[in-house]
Structures are given as C-alpha cells and as structure tokens.
Image 1 (cartoon, rainbow, N blue to C red):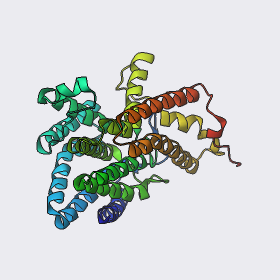
Image 2 (image 1 turned 135 degrees about the vertical axis):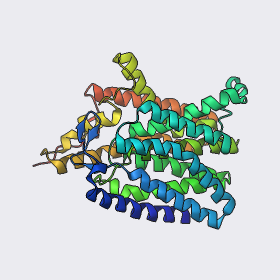
Image 3 (image 1 turned 30 degrees about the vertical axis):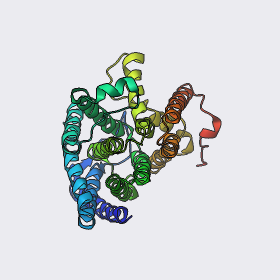
Image 4 (image 1 turned 45 degrees about the vertical axis):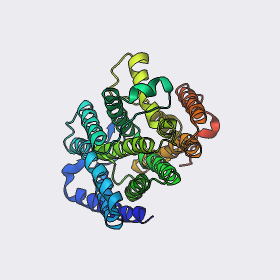
Length: 365
C-alpha cells in the first residue's frame, strides 16, 4: 500500500505546482471554454497528466528500491508509455496534433510493449479465434489496435470533472484485486501506483475543475489500463479474457456506439466531435434542471453533478467483472446486460423519457 501513498502525495504536490505555474504562464491554459465538447467557465490548465506521470515514475522508483525486479518492470512499462503520453501532452500545448497521429503513436507504444514486455493478446477465450492469435502476425496488430483503442476511449469519456479519473480508478483497483488473487505482484503494484497518482490529481480536479487531465493524461492512463489488462491475462491463464472486456466495457462501448451513431445514423465522419455522447446528454437533460441561475458557479456545479451518474454506470460493469473474473460465461452475460442497459438509458434520455428519479430537481434561486 505504500505505492499508493507515495504516488498520491507526489501527484498532489506536483499537480498543485502545475496549477500555480499556469497562473504565471497564461499560454498553457485552455482558453476555449465554449464549444461542442467543453463545459467549463474559465481558462484551465490541461496538464494534469504531467503530474500523474511524475507520480508514477516516483512510485516506480520507490518500488525499484524496495523490490528491484518489480520496480524494473514498472520503469520499463512507463518507458513504453512515453509515446502515448508525449503525443497527448504536445496536443495539450500546441492544439495541433490530429487524433489519427495520437492514435498511431499510442499504437506504436503498444507495439513497443508487445516486444519489450511480451504484452500480447494471445487469447480471447473463443476456441476458433484463439488458435489464430498464437501467431504474431495476427496477435501483434490485434494487440496494438486494442490498446490504442482503449487509450482513445478513455480520452473520449474524459468530459467532466472527476469522470475519467474515478472511472479509471475503479478499473485499476479491480485489476489490483485480481492481480492479488493470482499473486501477480508486478501488476498489482503498477495498478496501485496508478490509483495513487490519479487520486492526487483528482483532489484538484473535482469538483471545481482547477486542472484537467488533458490528452496527455487521458492517453497515458488509457495506455496503462490497456497494457495492464493485456499483461494480466497474458501472464495469468486463470483470468478470463472476458474479464478485461467487461471491466473496460463502458469506455469501449461508448466509443463503438459513438462511431455507429456518427457514421450510420447521422451519416457523418466518426472523427468529427459532437455533443451527444451519453455523459453530455446527462449534463444537458438530467443535471440542467438543478440550476436556478446561469453563472460560472452554477456551471461548475452542473459539471460536477454529471460525473456520479457515470461512476454508477461504470460500477455496473466493474463490480461483476471483479467478482467473476474467472467465469467466462457469467462475464459474457454481464457484457450483454451492460450493452442493453446503456442503449436503453441512451434512448430514454434522447427521447426525453428518462426515469423521473434520475432527474435532480431544480433548486430555488
């Protein structure tokens, strides 16, 4: 547990330093406060991922001192993550790195992990497919596509204060628990370090949004989630591959559903941002009624009240994944249930038929 404490304290302090520094250097603030996917009222620094990376590196260094074999693997994993983090942090600063370039660099990081860490998807617990995944010519592209897709998915759901950070902490805690169950110290320690680092950032992000993850933070966390789930399954045959899918199904299905909606329902490009992701609809149609006046403080309140809806939704997948991590058929059943629940909820909100208990009542002025 010392891993969580060290990374938490380092992230807490380093993130505060970044916030203070941004007040002196206004050019590192995100000055765009109103567009289709932004819901904040003032310029905010987007470099929360830098504090998380620093905390993870310090945590890995401490682990290297306490348990050298584990620490060395952790440092190697973080080195593999640098391309994913780097493309995101450059985008946060320049606003000039396309989504395709970020995806490609993240996939390149996954390819490095495939070679350096043997982080390879060689089974999905489907007999007809698993035989083919033993071959590197199929396993390698499948792995890099999956890890890159997970990183991109975390970036997509990173829309409101505390949303991505809490959802990913739930997932990492589950990974740590399953790793403990199978006695995989490396995976468990890595997951704990990431939980502590994200928690240190979360203090400053929720509820007031003093700093954002940015693309650097979202891609870094998403890459680490992807790599840790791949490694957990690759190193421990008793863990079902469907554990990983159910654990990550909220951001993954959000991305797939978004692609379907944009391309086949609206006839547009999947890469063009829109304002009707599930978390945005909750903000606009469920939480909007809680505000009695339209000012900066009210916008912050609406923003922070949106995230708990999605925290609960993610737990609908994380809890059963954690409980039934070795039972393939139960995990498949819960995957189907989650997809049905997501689509039902989305359609209800779109059609203004959301259950009344989900709508927070308007406060008096």
